[in-house]
Image (cartoon, rainbow, N blue to C red):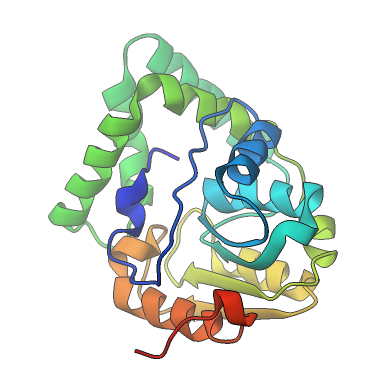
Length: 223
């Protein structure tokens, strides 16, 4: 949510990489956007809302997934306080307070208040804009518990999270991994929610190592 392809700019994985847009106002629509972005089987990597949309892909088209990497996310249904918080952010944004809404979210993104990373997040949020942000807030409210869908996957699953993620703590990720048939879970020390920005080297290493174990056509080279 509020992020674009710059979220992945420091993560070095082999091409081709497709950055699927998730702009639909419901999680099912986001899943269909992902499925329409590529043909045939693919490896899906999603962070936070991207992974939540990925869980719906797993529910709708598990056979399309050759691998699924879920980062900094929550496979549970929305909690009452979350629904109330998203509704308040939507009202604030609708009333012209988009920048104020983004400012409320910013402190939860990183473990440390790094000014460079904070500015990168603000830049992404500005490019995403208030209209898509409101669609993403609406979509969050439509998500369902995804643990049963995760359990149906036959493909390898990689679960990554930051040790200091205030939004999606490690316990959420251990639960995701526990429901998958073939899962590997890593907690990245010192990282917060946007771990691809805070810990890009560790994220890259873990992702590339996992990709080497996938079917040949998706395997990561050792170079």
